[in-house]
Image (cartoon, rainbow, N blue to C red; front, side, top):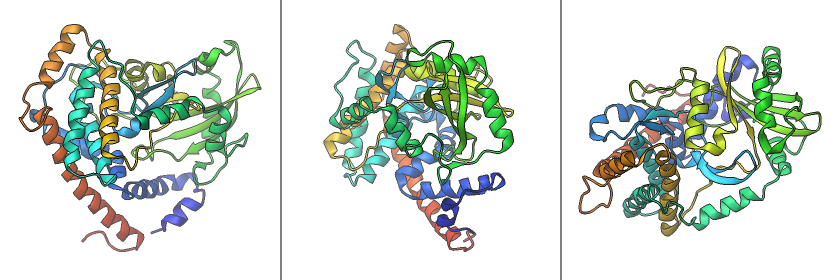
Length: 402
């Protein structure tokens, strides 16, 4: 078995990608219990499938499907203005909004444990989370940002293209091959160039930031992008594009695969997975939805978006008790807005009544939410330790059978 240093220090051949990516994914998930929760969507939905009877049926709306902290954050709209919305929608489906609440609750509780916060805080965080979600359904839906979130948004607002280029490409005018970027095959490169000659892609790129609608696109460079955790192993490309031979932009091309998130039977969703992601994004995160298009690439369905300097992932680590509760309240409000905008007034009222029912005396939230998060925390903690044991034995070249 290759050591992880060898795995990540050399650029693998295309035929070795799958094995190398599996090693990288296993490493990422072994770094912390919180990282394991982020990367193990399959376990979350396996648990859901065996506990559906204990979870109320919410109204059929587009949900994130993988609503953890890392999938929320500042993003720029087509004009470059910054908002906080759901930023990753690979798993989006028309499903039960309760699933997003449970997934977010699990992520928040896991982050609290990673910050060495006392266990009693988990109850407070979930109470604040459900309160923030419910308030998003009211007329006074805009709430003050906690300091942690405000700081991240201010950083995002002030970022320039040069910072994105430095962060993603080391400040170069080409994509540097190495641990993050791997070379494409000739077939992949040819397919990428053909993709960016389509009118659909040209219209999307030129519609952003008041660009010339007749501008010509040219692929300057492209590479396989080693990025993400749960999606590692699927096709992911970074493409540097010149607009009329002058302005540069960096495009993210990501394979869209069948979602693990359960959807309601009979839901009117696109059959093509790229179109499903693009449609879900438009409903849940309009600022991002305006920047995504679906397309075929090498017999796969992909979705494409331009990376903007303002698109950032929240780095929420080492929170105090008060910050943790404020962040839980705010982020749940972001999810609540995304759900609420898809419901009419009677549907909103009915869903809120469901959320406010079956509450125990010692927890100001639905019993099913508390029980689900606690059960999932215990399940993931044990699975995380098992993953770490197996990973360490693999790296030592030992059998994982015992």
